[in-house]
Image (cartoon, rainbow, N blue to C red; front, side, top):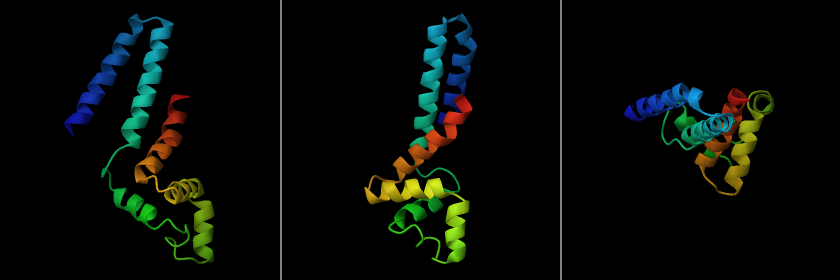
Length: 116
């Protein structure tokens, strides 16, 4: 938990002292914070209540409908609920790149709208 406090304080100081920087300096800090948060969120390991679910989806990704107990309702659930996440998970699994890449790509999709 200490690491979260450290990063919170570090980001707070960056926001406080950015007023003394030029526009280029502010933009550099903005992009550095953006990239830092994406890496911090994207490469987490065994963090959160849903971590076991992400591992389960990744471990059973050879067929996206295997996880959903193939039926009409599961196809509907796949299409309606989180088709992009399941598609990313399926593609990353096919190339055997690991669950962390799935989290990293998901972090990009989740963090980018906050910054832009």
